[in-house]
Image 1: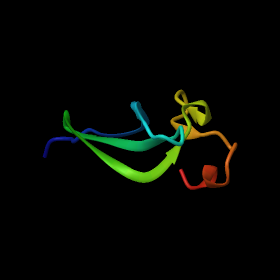
Image 2: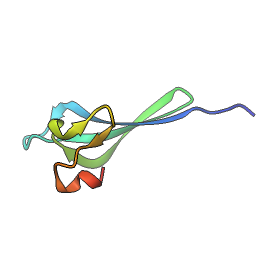
Image 3: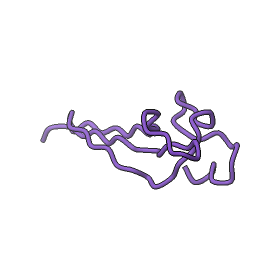
Length: 66
């Protein structure tokens, strides 16, 4: 039985910022080198996103959701 690799990377799409200044939070799931991106349905401003930790800073009410 071979071993599988699995990783999850949350990120925001800075290329598609909405009119209200927020961007969607997406999640990239990779299994054995094959990846797929899904939307979480949560959005935040690029300034509120902590890229190193992959999470929303606690600057808004939905900071705990992401």
